[in-house]
Amino acid sequence: MKCAIVIPARLESTRMPRKLLRDDTGRPLLAHTIETAIGAARMSGGFITAVYAAVDDEALRKAAEAAGAAAVMTRRDHASGSDRVAEVAAGLSEDFILNLQGDEPEVEPGTVIQAARLIARAGEPAPMGTLGCPIASAAEYRNPNVVKVAADSAGYALYFSRAPIPFDRDSGGQAVPPCACRHIGIYVYRREFLLGYKRLPPSPLETVEKLEQLRALYAGHKIRLGITSHAPPGIDTEEE
View 1 (cartoon, rainbow, N blue to C red):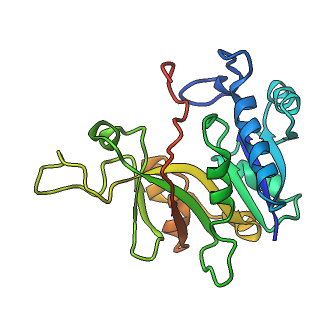
View 2: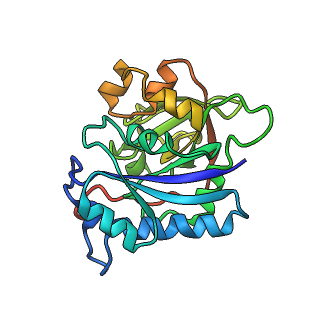
């Protein structure tokens, strides 16, 4: 079994247009994420075979190739990053496809490998997997830019939300429950599921929360949740 990493890279992001080309460090933001992905592939013992950037602009293509990724031009009108990744996955042969967000430059290679292997075991029923990390502070718990995930006893996601979940009724939401968990936006899919996933209609939950993973839960599919102690800070604001 093999896995390919595909990094969806859209030029005009909603909150920070052209952020993947921001080069405050001397290199584009996208290059840092690609560097991590390549490092994970080298450390994976041959499980991760390739790193692709799914781009929608020539400037992103050049930046991705300069950083060492194979760049694939995709349509500009995709509704989500997973839809963009699926366009590239249609031309790949790996068993699993890992969607690594382009604006996660500080994710660790070991975390990427952990995510890549989440559903690569015999008898695993989930067609996709993702990661979570225990929430450390009340500010993080209440921040709508920090997506939360609640899981069942078997390690499958029950729900994702920008709201503080689970909500501690007795404290009026002031206390952070011990089971509160931050979602880390790395996804791994069985390739065939991903190719069908793009044909699922966006769900009402996805539309309201603006969280594409809710499309899979709404349709009745399981999502395996792995827990890590490292929550990389994504780039969504000027301060970050």
